[in-house]
Amino acid sequence: MTILKVGIVGCGEVTQIIHLPALRQLSEQFQITALCDVSPTVLDGVSAVVPLAAKYGDYRQLVADANVDVVLVANPHAYHTSVALAALEAGKHVFVEKPMSITFSEADALQEAEARTGKTVQIGYMRRYAGAFVDAVERIKADRDNIRFARVQDFIGQNRIIIDDTSRVIRGNDIPAQSIVEHQRLTDASMVEAIGTNDPILSRAYGLLLGLSSHDISAMRELLGMPKSVLHAAVRQGGAYITATFDYGHFVCEFATGVDQLARFDAYLEVYSEKSVTRIDYDTPYVRNIPARLSITEPEGPAGVRQVVSFPSRLDSFVVEWHAFHNHVTRGTKPKTTIADARQDLEIFESIMQHLKAGSAGELSNVAS
Image (cartoon, rainbow, N blue to C red; front, side):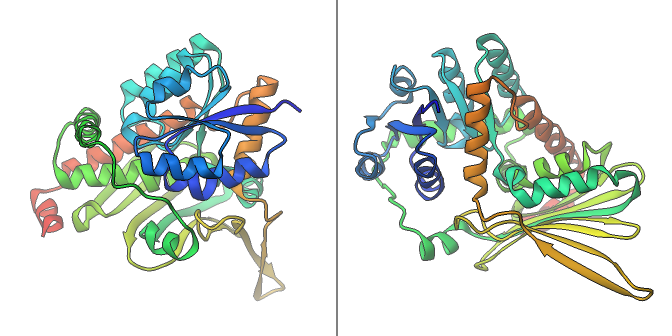
């Protein structure tokens, strides 16, 4: 089996907790050969776990490394596109953590580079690779005309509440001041381009959509298809809570998301048909090998119901998506989580933001208070 050599740009939380163990588990398919981070403390700490990997403080050095076949882009959102473009131009295949990009112009630049270079690009929507979700998609596909209602929900406690109790993460306070300033400048500029304003409430809401909600909306699209329109959207609590209603013609899908201080992960997709309810639950993305669960509720006898809860395996969904990525690179096939696919999330986010911006001044002032 072909072993792909992986260079990692961004050695923070998700890399340490998830990607390093996943890649080590797939050692017959991947070898980590290069690491990059702007924090020397983080870079040195992760390098101790992967001592044979080259170390770089600049991603441009990593993508130029001849001992790298694949680049994992896991640094801050504002840099995802620039790093992915540099990797493609250097002839590397690319695995981009979500969100793929902040703006349409970035997404379009990535699509152009992908088409021109012929390299594989996969976006890191691991929830869509979970066995329970794949099974649910097949089930819903055969019964889509009978859907009556759907709901997508994602309420989580802040990541560190779970992470600090389950994992050791190396964090550095030695990021150069110039890098911090540049990151904020790029983020602000991208936000203004994306939503047309630097309003702090709307910016925070868009950031929530790009981050947490990109998983939910992406999974919703595969499960239900692209909605016809956004019927309603509202934001509260300074941009930390968002609700929306999507029009699917013969049914609607309600969406709700927010971040609180409870150490739990309340994330699910639920589809109501005339004689069944199909639900996928995700317990946490940051504790490995806890599988997503598929629950099917159906009639039982003349006046009862039965519920069957299942998952096909305990294989971590991050491992599954990396395995799929290897197959696509080595066989020349296309992943389901492509650049074009992820661009559709930006289209939905744009529609949601239009509703939020159209909300009354009173609503936004209430959020601020």
